[in-house]
Image (cartoon, rainbow, N blue to C red; front, side, top):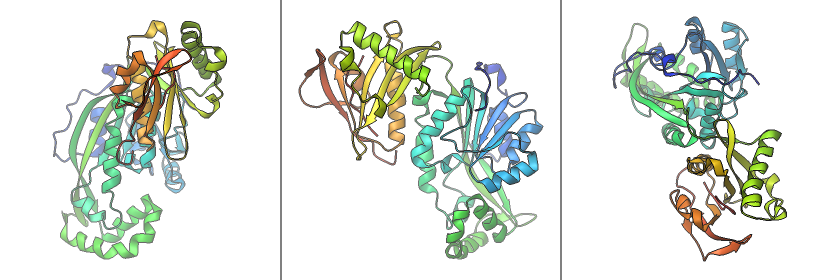
Length: 405
């Protein structure tokens, strides 16, 4: 794991240039320079390809690292820039420590993250960014001449739309949206041969579809774009989404280390056993090893927790053991944990969600789409109600909780 200690990024770190006007032709590097700090800043590009943007950022004073899933493209990047800071990896499992970057960049790559891993990629970006650090996602829209030109080989309408839907959940995952801007990117290609070579290099799986798609690509080549000095010039509408990792409020993450798991169990004992009188043997019910545990922190200190587990193979999930330390109540910890958890479950396509809520907490859960089912019942001497949240529509589910605070 690579990284350095957490240190908040301030607004003074960011460029003061005005954002681009919508519909204006801009270079990708102009957009990056307008929204990300570069000089003496540590930047990660996820999906760095052959290293063109990483090299550009290094020449402008950034400590730019690159992550690429395709080993062939990464090897070409290493030959160009040297091996330092260029790693094999994916956005949904970043091989870096917490809070070690001022900026994370996705350029034409976020929609290539598998649909059910896109929210996890956002979680990972928030984890490795320092407080106040920026995530800049530059996505091609499913429109324009260039999109129509390459569409016969691969129609990305659905996956590009899914990527935009995932970005809409960023606020639940620890981000504030700073800006969202459209602009036009001009793409020049010398010939259909050069075009298909570039498309296949970016994704070798496309080669199998090339023979069938080639006639339609050549027809679109003649019909779309405009003549250029060498070949033809095409327009691709783009969207820039600029997000900042929050500097205030709860910080949510998966409890992975022994120390984090110990903090979760200590918090549950404090709330459920010491405060509410639940027997310890009943609180430790034997399901913990089957669950993912979340830990919320306020001002760096453990403040809340919950766990969730699969109930079967149909995607149904149960959320349980939602607890907030007495000194942290009233500060939005439970709400933040639920929003974070549900965004990830929805992103994975899981659902419906079930939980058993203490009656005093029903209003919190109904705000998230949970609805009562059946009559109230007593669990560990405390009145509860079963709540169900249907699986959300679309490709991006789920919940039941025992004792909720």
